[in-house]
Length: 157
Image (cartoon, rainbow, N blue to C red):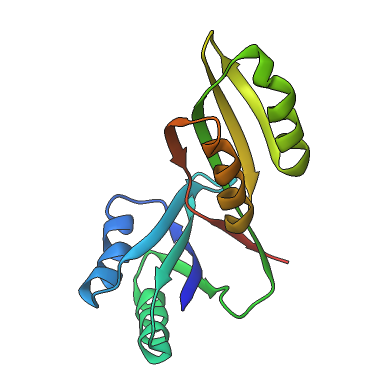
């Protein structure tokens, strides 16, 4: 089962390494990790997505995260009401005649062209993981040259 965990931490050197170390020490790969300062530059917000089959191990990791001195709060969104989003930037093959097709796709998904040259366009889109995956299937028809995406960001309702 995929777990989405939010960790509010003090923005200090080495905190990210210590948090990630808890997962790797137990043999769990972090599927996605997004970290950023909050409105207070002394505090950072981490959204971590990890695949874990054993609920007891996740409970233990949550307890150990809470014991880290620089951790302020830990929230496991897995069974809580929350919203999550990802951002994707993709460079695709693009011709002027393709613009109406792309606009039709963007009417379905939250996206737009942010830059284009003669034969390529860079698009940005925001959505949940399912929406992003559907969008990428559509963009594959144009030919994706390059792709980057953020990890999941999550916030409680």
